[in-house]
Image (cartoon, rainbow, N blue to C red; front, side, top):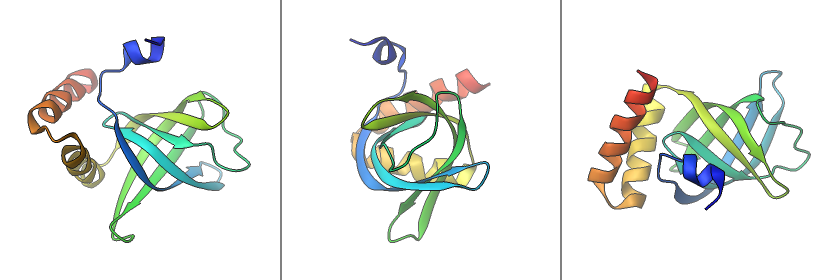
Length: 125
């Protein structure tokens, strides 16, 4: 088990969707989500990616034909040749509600999800 897997507190669920990464300077990159959790996401490395570990971005995940959007304020946790991992620093209430539902549907266990939400609140509180 890798060090990052040992530190991971939140279940990641595989999720294939379009995602957009936006820098504070307004640059943006389109990519594909590989997996998502309540506290982060893993995406395919975007073409012409210039982010480094610790850089801050906005991660935009569009769902249901662009009708639902999940916005996460993230920082780069790790960069690998084919993927980039992000740590969620902040997420608004509407986005976390949509993310909660997405993870619940993919986990198949509301009890596990509720336990993770309680842990997330303790870490942030």
